[in-house]
Length: 415
Ligand SMILES: Cc1ncc(COP(=O)(O)O)c(C=O)c1O
Image (cartoon, rainbow, N blue to C red; front, side, top):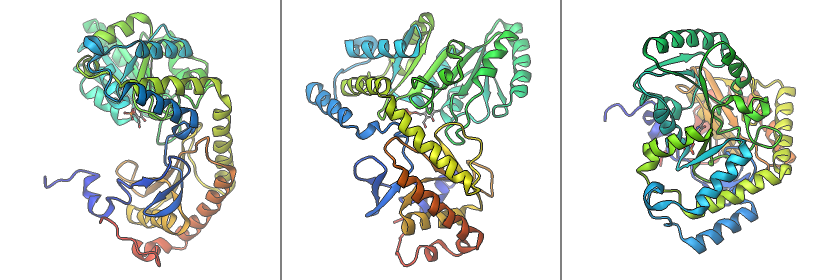
């Protein structure tokens, strides 16, 4: 274990502070970090459901009624319940698909869906910025994988031409895979353009809409709804870990595809079903997501205020059209650590930081995730603080060691 990996090599300096930080208190915009209150912009609790009183009550009631163990078994064997089926039916109706299958996790779920849908004669064509779970799913695929530059439709078309030739030779099919909303940049996948390409090429489209479900579209049904291409997405996938503020995931498609997945997705067939409190809790969350548009409207009030504020002050927030807001700054990893420590210790603002090797060297992204439970006063405070941070960055303040920056607050990193 000499090589500790690209992230692990920072563990000594970063563990417990930049990586594996422990936030305490009720989930929401105001939590505690190392004993101090922080304004928190780092949770994908988009609709604020994590701590919604009706959700908390539903979770507590379900846990009291069923316990966390039930059902004891894989759904195919002994773990199916009417609640699992009800949740699938409600998701299908909401999403406008014939059928839906629940999955235990988003990460493992999309991996398994990719593995189950493709055989070695098929060709997968995917966006270069796809989430790690899509890449890991593709690693299990025994056939060809063709990548296209992020959101580059000419690049996609070139790969579709290659894929068409390859599949004609061995009687395979083509699956295009993208995200609805990319979680780092807030860019939307170009679903409309991709669906348009179906007129020229024969393929199916799988969309992982982890960040779009609940946040995008007039009813919150996601990025495909937002772009008006609902039926063009053949297989729609999302996690419960973001807008739904829970754990688990689902995949929706035509009945034949879901039936195939039900009997062929190995990580579900051979694994215990989602616990009942999670399923019953998800029914409550879905009800609120569907029936309380004011939650999504409030989210977008905060999103729009942040974007307008950052842009007005000259910040580079990339090309986001979704709630995720990347504030892009220039600097190396050491400088980024000092800046983040300043933000947390001296300004009480907690957000995630993204540096090399996740993004190119010399770039720092402070990633802001707004939620429906933030307030406009939080936005104002954040913009003002970021202006000061930018001023300090330009003045060379963070070229000092990060211990100096955060003085006089003593912070022992990596204890
Ligand atoms: C696009 C995408 N897919 C899947 C996942 C993983 O979902 P889960 O946390 O449910 O495993 C994430 C989480 O970050 C994601 O962004």
